[in-house]
Length: 300
Picture 1 (cartoon, rainbow, N blue to C red):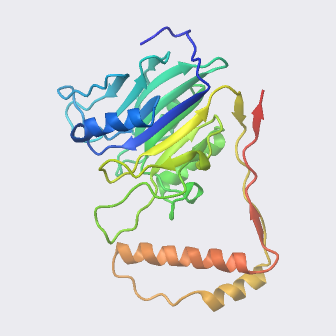
Picture 2 (tube, one colour):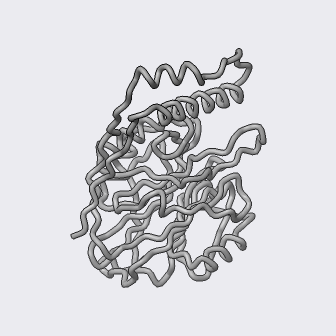
Picture 3 (cartoon, one colour):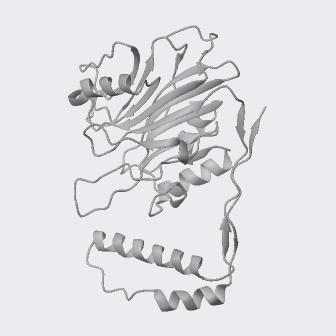
């Protein structure tokens, strides 16, 4: 831990995000990768650590949140020793696990946190309030929340909760443009559940999936500029114009016949086919226009 008033002198930070699904067995490979990519801050979830298991990287300070009586889960932050920072503790989180450090830039402070939520747990908005009402944020990890806004094929109840909270509290939920999670069942399609919550102007185009390490999740790499004051005022809703009669006719001509669904895998495949057919029918009809007005970004 360092002086809480000392500021970073760097203009760019290199961030690494990963669901490790157990960090100990790949600790050496992870340290090598962090050094290879010159990572400043690594936000790791599903470390599977407990107080009896230690991980030490020579160039990094380590902050951990470990489970004492349960297996799996939990989070860690690795930050370069020469970066001014201090640990931040959240109070009374119920459904989200988090480890956080705060770093002061020359213009502002930014809170970085590794976050994780178990798949079977229902996301609570009071946890999101506790996390996000802390100034400028970069939170990243696996929240097991799906929503089409961040490139998921489907939307879940937890995804709706997160999306609504982000819209109401002026931060973004971003994800890469390619899958990060590859199920062990080869019949299941890869999808996106690793996300970045931020209000400092990071976009999906800033997030790069790295095909590195051995986990069912691929890591995410991101470079962020920290020298400009960037404020996001939120997203406006989609503005859509459409000739609905033409769209209906086109959809009736192209929508495939759906046979009885036997299992969840067929249900997901059918939903994916239906969604893509609707999107193609919409784009094909003349006069269609759909765009999202981006969040307002101001540089002071």
